[in-house]
Length: 147
Image (tube, rainbow, N blue to C red; front, side, top):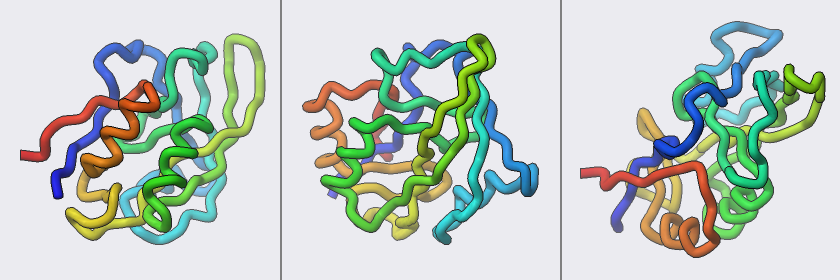
């Protein structure tokens, strides 16, 4: 089975990354590199409101942590059962003083080259996932051959 490493699209605006924090511990974000479920509720602050009409995946200032919208959540639920979880997050848009709720993607599958999504010092997805992502015209990630 062929897998692809995912990264933030080069078209994503550089200064639109969210700032991730936790009231519990500044290093709590490291739990995203583990395969244990996360109970912490994180906060993400954006200077300006992310373009929810243009993008489906939003990077934060920590590597391999992404805010996901409903379309990405539907794709993950359709194709990657039991390989991930959504972690609740409080969103703050500083520019408009808006507070929202969202979810971050946490990949639970750490078995290299198995399933349709796995984590191994980065997020990898199967060819099936990539094809469905493109078919649904989702935006935010680009895919690199793992070789």
